[in-house]
Length: 241
Ligand SMILES: Nc1ncnc2c1ncn2[C@@H]1O[C@H](COP(=O)(O)OP(=O)(O)OP(=O)(O)O)[C@@H](O)[C@H]1O
Ligand SMILES: [Mg+2]
Image (cartoon, rainbow, N blue to C red):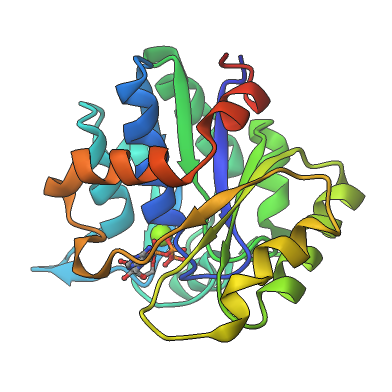
């Protein structure tokens, strides 16, 4: 069994958080003790000078883990910029080794870790450092989340071809519908992508309207995830079956 998986996106805002939450809750319902991590977050709101890593908080709450938020999210930046750029502007430095140490600490407490990436696959996370450097350090396979709408074939294939070139292990692809917009390309996009890649297309996650992102909807989210995503193939790819 792998130590965990990193949920990465073809872009920012494609649904990494909701898919991470669906995955965590589904694995928990299958009996696994799953930890969560969102090591890098930016564009975070603040309340009375406390900065709030909203993705990390949502993943902590929906999974019900007892781990401190500081462990789940060691780096959080206010500006809505790539973490590497935000850090530089704040005079901070992202220490990848520290992320690895915290990951190992959390991994020691759980059977399996679901780590939400940040931005799109090639987002800068330091000076001359892109996200794949962290992926390699943590030695995690990837679950790639893509948007469902027009343009996704290009973004998804670029991301997947990069992974092949860099030897990154992608266990599956999830196409997520994050808006109610009607888009005639959505019906054929997943099948077209599948023609050009060996990576299993695990399914299309539906638009949930206002039900998305509400932590009280844990059971609903897990149920929808298991209905629409081929969890058997995913478990097999992660060595969990
Ligand atoms: N299937 C869906 N149904 C309804 N709303 C969705 C769905 N997927 C995503 N959304 C909404 O779209 C927005 C972006 O989704 P999400 O936060 O999961 O993306 P992300 O890839 O994690 O973004 P970031 O790069 O900021 O971490 C959120 O407001 C979320 O609630
Ligand atoms: Mg997110």
